[in-house]
Structures are given as structure tokens and as C-alpha cells.
Length: 103
Image 1 (tube, rainbow, N blue to C red):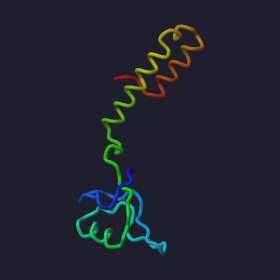
Image 2: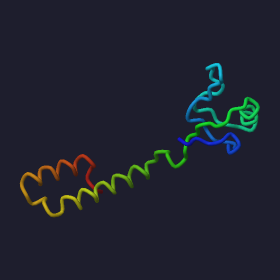
Image 3: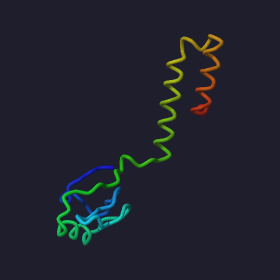
Image 4: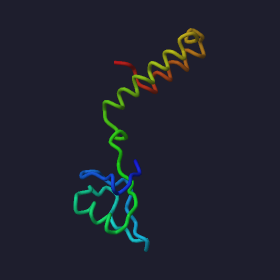
């Protein structure tokens, strides 16, 4: 999510939170894709900013895989010196299983 000025909105952005009027009524709902007419309405209504969905915050399969790979590498690094100890070997295996085995 990213809070931006109404003047910075570009067509195609999507609201992450509803736009609420001064009386508490919802002017535009969460998930609304902003088009030219809606952007003009927001400006006319005097709305100073909106909260939009952030593209870099979108979860993709590639990001999940990259994150898991990073976690697996971190597990290897952390346990490198101690995984031969019987108790640490159990913890190491459980941790590896939690993050899934590397393919």
C-alpha cells in the first residue's frame, strides 16, 4: 500500500483502502480501479490523498520462490557449524522441512 496525493494518481491504479467522505460515507470502495473520470471526481471532491495498491507489494510465485530460496540459504549458513551436534541436527532438519527442501 502506498499513500499518494490525488495529483499523482495515474489511470489504472487501484485503491487499497476506501475513500471516505467528510460525513463518513464511502465515496469509492477498496479495489476500485481509478480511471480518468474517477480521478477528476476525487479532485472535485477535494480528496487530498488516496491509498493505492503497490505493485512492488504484489505477491508472485517468483517472489515466494526467491524468498524461500533465501531462507534455505540462511538456514544452511546458520547451522553450518553446528548441524553435526545431535540436538542441533534435529532442529536443522525440522527447520529445513519447514522451508521445504531445495529442488
